[in-house]
Image (cartoon, rainbow, N blue to C red; front, side):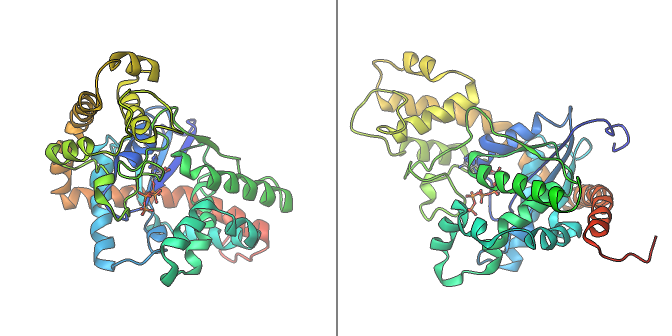
Length: 338
Ligand code: AQP
């Protein structure tokens, strides 16, 4: 597969195996990854080293890695057409992170919104890994010399830091890294919690009714959507400031149907929130039905998952080893194996 793809541009992106994937992960990221596998050489990571920056249980992490791989495949990431790798199996990620950390000002990391949010959530278990997270993410991307990085809007700031670090390294040593371009979808880039639509939909939301998991049963999806927080007005109108709950449901519908907000407003003009929520639930349930079905098939085949991760991690190692050798040479590390 690699040799056929030699001329193709490279896409790299990843998700953390911290639990089941939700609709934000799907619409903001994974759905778009699937559309890239024919045209790009793709490296899709399961970033387990990022997942240990918050409190976790090792047995759950192992289970979540299998589960994440099964969900990737259920979302259309065919391991014959793209490389599904496990971050801890590709040694270069941590090695490059150390080098990038040595050129990254601490102040840049302390300013990161995700760090500030997560530091508040995990006050009692705050570790340096959480602060260092964006450096490891920069390494994840730069080590592939990726052209394009499809992510949700919450990762934009980390992508900017990645570009800054690439530029700084290139200026300090010599041109080495491409400056990767973010790909942020027009709709679905920031899906909010159904229960508190001012915070993003998240796996670790303590109120699980706010998070729609892509493998939730139809009755669960229906229940969560019907009880989504809205407002006391009853018109279906896109207004993030004053109607965040309704606007969030509209963005979910728009991302699945490609309808504009104007079209959705027209369709539900004069109808109440009940009808609108029912329609959103129908779209979500119907669109996720094939994902849910394939997930059931893939998740029961442990050997196939292991094979896919092994093959993807080997391909990732081949690509990143060359880059690491170059980086080590540029920073002045010795190599007696030439
Ligand atoms: N709410 C969201 N809307 C749109 N895109 C989102 N992404 C995450 N949340 C949303 C995108 O999903 C990809 C994988 O994300 P991740 O696995 O790194 O997870 P995360 O951002 O840490 O997600 P969570 O759910 O918020 O996890 P916890 O609760 O563990 O912190 C990324 O491209 C991300 O932009």
